[in-house]
Length: 162
Length: 78
Figure 1 (cartoon, one colour):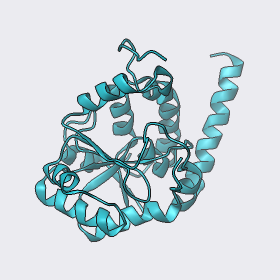
Figure 2 (cartoon, chains in turn orange, purple):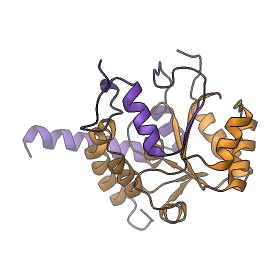
Figure 3 (cartoon, one colour):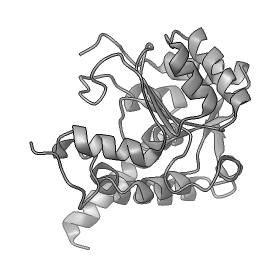
Figure 4 (tube, chains in turn red, cyan):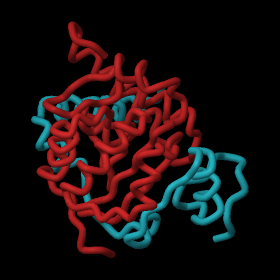
């Protein structure tokens, strides 16, 4: 076990750093659902960035600023937007998912997304669709609860975007 | 739906309502944790050309009880 800890201020650190560097991205997966208010728990942060060299360079700058050690190869992977990147060389774990299952493209997901404080978050409908498309046992086991949450969430915000 | 299922669903919905009423900082405080995580088995970074390649990596390298395999995928012997 490492001595890493995840503290609330670190989640905000990601959001603040990405915002200040102009990164286009969404919190996705269970971390996104938790930000929306889902009563679950997770150990890492899943982010869906727009795939472009410019956005990749912004991500590299932001991650280095908050303490991630990135090799030249790591930086190239981010700038080139490899579909799935797991980063464990920082103060906490981050997954960069440039091509999440079940989501057609970043623009459409961002259009449907919501902003909670300064956290841009994928819509709960897209989070569920992506987990359903991933089809892993750990995802399928959680779908019923996510659907229940979606009903409560949508009922709680009748006049806001879902 | 059985009475037990209905009660469980009602209880979960109450949890949702409570969590939705909390500020984001509390959602993070209750929702994010750090624990021994064998999937992140070191401080190394990994990258994959496709999400499918990542899925196959997980199915080949992690035991079935981690839940990273898709139903029907060949599970690694435990």
